[in-house]
Image 1: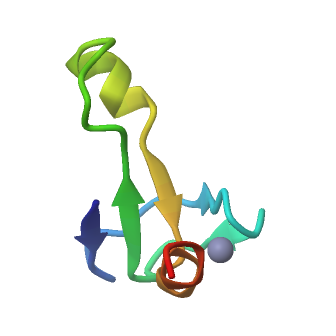
Image 2 (image 1 turned 90 degrees about the horizontal axis):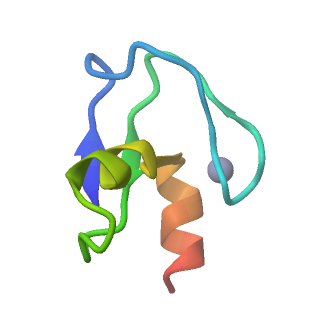
Image 3 (image 1 turned 135 degrees about the vertical axis):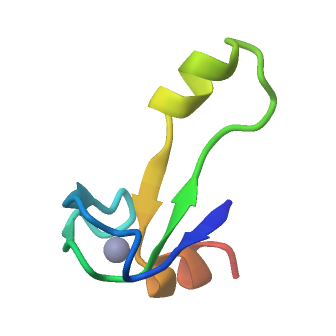
Length: 60
Ligand SMILES: [Zn+2]
């Protein structure tokens, strides 16, 4: 899991937790599987962009 700052957020994503857009310019979190079973490329394609509040709620 890695934070993405407002300046780094240049694309629109869909948050997997709430199904709503993560708009460009909104700080959020990038989450991906780190077990590496399918290799680095697969891990990168499996990244998901979460709202910060959704990640906090989902991992509490
Ligand atoms: Zn969300």
